[in-house]
Length: 460
Image (cartoon, rainbow, N blue to C red; front, side, top):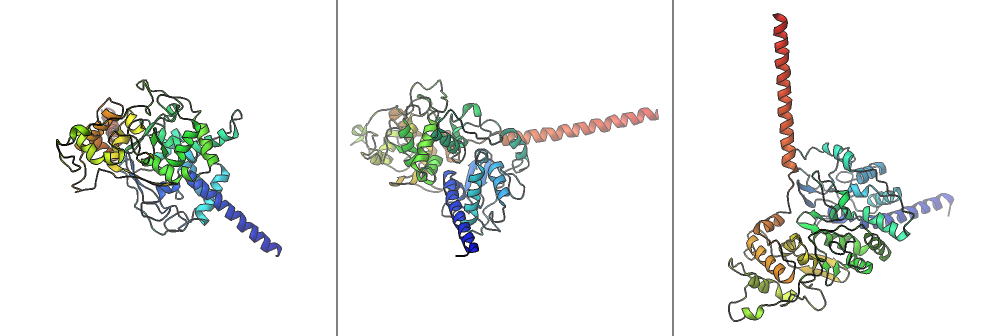
């Protein structure tokens, strides 16, 4: 082999290795969860992401030169991933978690770029454009937001901690972007750093407190239990992944190396505890076996239809008990989880229980499909449960298997069905702009009036 041929071969090998590393970072970053629409081609975008200020559609990040990022230089790619600025200079919305990706190393950025340019098939399809309502459609406003909240992206290793801990922190805070979901947001939709991993709303779902607090967080979990949950999405007797977390397990955590999952678990277990004073015990310990099936037999038929007068017991035994069993204990193999000692029923926030009833669960695991049908139905589905029925069913489950407290209302169900709580930021921004316009007009009128009076005084 000639020297030039050897050089080309070495170059090919180096690129192949970079593509492989980049593919792994893309998995760790869960890129496919947002940039691949249901039934769509990988990374071609088009997924509708419901946010408190409107629906955001993910972009095409294939190497297409007409619809994707095929014309991006590596510097432009790095700026988009780390700073939220597209190749054309326009700002991205922080639904793309560039505030976390900001800590990615130069080496990981290079490998990601190589992967998306040389390891992904180009798709020449332009997805639906994001069109948020005014004034959120003014992307220039994100420049001010970035100045306030983006940070410098520094992620220095802590010499007092182990290499495993430092690797876990890098993965959790960077590629895996745990804080994007699990940290509450402020008025301007920024992460509240003082409540790091203390729990936050993600559309219709609630990402719970995952700090080391034993009452409000996951301090009662062992490192191995947390690693098992991340890898499988299931920790019998405590929690099951659904919604955004289910997607993260399916597309990302379940495909990471055991060493990286263990590193993340090592780091998360050390996060400073945040305790909610209303939590008198862990959300994983509420409830006990309960059944009133015997009292229903022979009295009225157990129905699973849309009977508006159906009680919570009738709705439960008609829709849920065949899988979760009469006592709510779930199946012996834990495929169908117990409804007591379950984070969805033991949490003070009921959104995850409501969202699970409405949307169900459907995710692929290393051991097969985790599936539960949703009962929210589609438009004109006569077998779907309405908001009142879902509230009745949720309250029955909570009262008998979970943490009693504030009851679920039909309005709560309607909010979850609509995609979660909306933000008042949009209305207030419009009011602020209107007030600024009015103030500007008043100032102009005062200046005109002052100049007119001044001119008259000179004439006099």
